[in-house]
Image 1: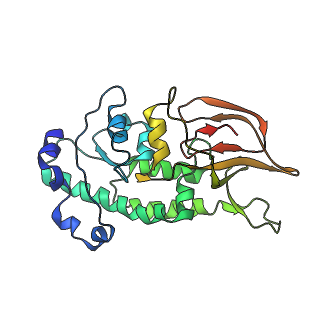
Image 2: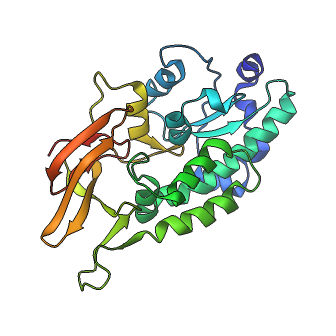
Image 3: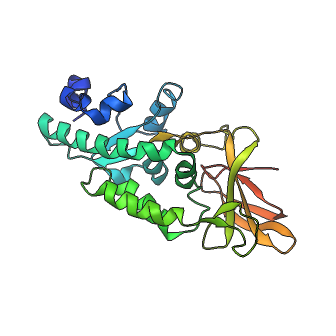
Length: 262
């Protein structure tokens, strides 16, 4: 399959598809390549090498389970049979790209992007978990976008005032643990990328569901109290570590679950 892709290159995205109104309205430039599974984050390092040049990443693979969950929610993924003929590979590629580009308007809308960029390990909600499963497994499905719209509508309903009966109308994303997530607008710099962080920490901070997301803004994670806000307890970080918060007004947390000290 890698030989087929490397020989076909741009033909994997056929001219007839590039000329559709859907694609011409976006005007993308395609960079087609085949990357082999390997150790030391081979795929991840290939993506990071193009971080400044690429606005998004789609991955076609014969083994979704071999890709980490972080990679499957950072990139847009689709499953493909390695024994297919070129014409069949092209058909699946077009279907995956069609699903992929239909998500773009949501990523370009500020409110929608914030919902989709919620920290996946720290925002506790079935709606988000179902979206994660959809993107991680079903990018090549014909019903992908219909299912996405349904799940996304449910997730957006979690954007509400912290105290519904209060006149204060600011909205927050609220999860099942009564945590509130407020996006930006403070700019506290970037998430860390040096050790012990992995390439996946950086990729998941730059991409969500295949598209670039802002990296300099974060969410404030907190719970409401009579005196204001507070947060304490143990929370997951960006590379499967557990972070203890002893008690403070809020936590600065990025889309990749990186906790930045106040």
